[in-house]
Length: 249
Image 1 (cartoon, rainbow, N blue to C red):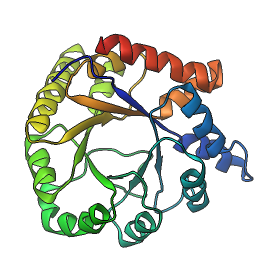
Image 2 (cartoon, one colour; image 1 turned 180 degrees about the horizontal axis):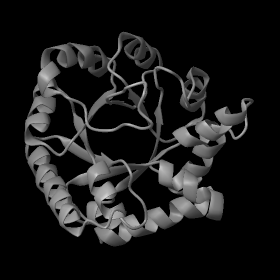
Image 3 (cartoon, helix red, strand yellow; image 1 turned 120 degrees about the vertical axis):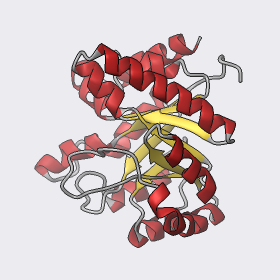
Image 4 (tube, rainbow, N blue to C red; image 1 turned 90 degrees about the vertical axis):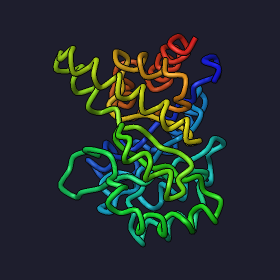
């Protein structure tokens, strides 16, 4: 694989909705953020419609489908309600993620190996509808093999453990987590899966992951929305884009 192939950036707008929902009303508008992200160089927009609707709403998904000119990556739990919503809208991609109501954010990858049969039947209608199916998983060979067997076209490697170790200054764990991510990206690519990565990435942690030639897309949200408070959304995204391109080159 050529290491010069452009790495895509998916911008997650969930936490624009978090700020909106803190006061109610309709400001700030996630759709406006999505449009700015497109103009700033985002290759796609990610939005997670949680079961408890804590940030993104059903109306947000409808609006995104209407206004986006880049692909929508619809993150969702493997529930019948979310499957029906995805089938109604038929976004470019759906990413199946684990979800617990008590968690603050997605805490780990989906357990695919233990639920192969259920998940295979769950994603089949989504694939038939033309959605690209991605599975959000840990950098674990067993989970990658299971994702491949059930018919997922894409995996997204959970980078949270690496980012957490970096924040804690744990150099040994950072080294191990990066090695695992790189090895499993190669393994998944060898199976014919498209490889994405994300969770917790920021300006300090993005470059080593962006440098893996098998990784085709990074999905980044919370950091970019937070950074936009200080420098604006378009400059925040542009700087991330610069770091990704520099690492890839």
